[in-house]
Image (tube, rainbow, N blue to C red; front, side, top):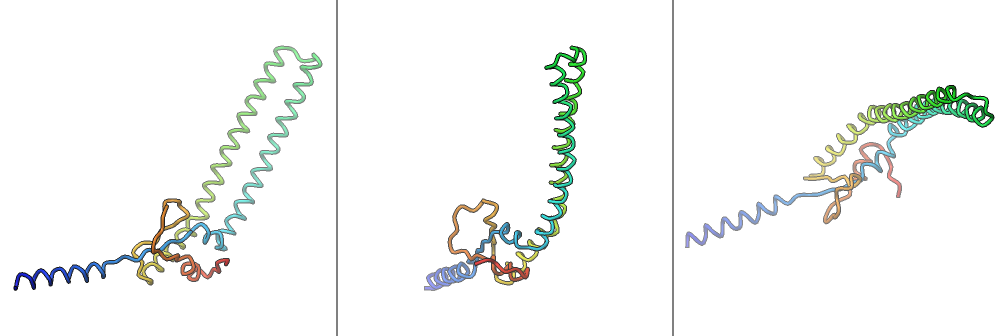
Amino acid sequence: MFKKLLILSIFTSLLFNAADAQQKFGHMNSGNLMELMPEVQAADTALAVLDDSLGVVLDTMMNRFRHKYDAALKAVNEGTMSKIKQAEAEKELNEEQAKINEFQKMGQVMISQRRQALLAPVIKKLNAVIIEVGKENGYSFIFDVSSGSMLYVTESDDVSKLVAAKLGLKLPE
């Protein structure tokens, strides 16, 4: 009898512990929330200014290249350029094309680095609010569907509204 009571007691205890141990899951799309944050909109504006200024320099380089190319092509077609001058012009155009390509790569790196620098504090702020929402509302896990890593959601709450409210943002309907 004592043995049966002990087993029943352990079984009941396990049942209650299992019920208490149920985890609460939430999900959200942090990318959608970030688009609404004024800090991200300001970062996008700053990045657009940088992109435009790099574009002006690139356009100047491209126009100079086209002008030299057209002049060389015209001289070759008219027969006014010697083979030696033709080889020099070709070498110069190849070097200029390499400079243009290098500038494009450097510009992409600059924009990427600037984007990371501008968005790092925004991501930190968003993550801090997500952690607050998780703690305040008893979530064990909050998944970010914008990362594409979640393929199936069951019995999960969308916490986007809670996070948006803490950030002072209004989600579109």
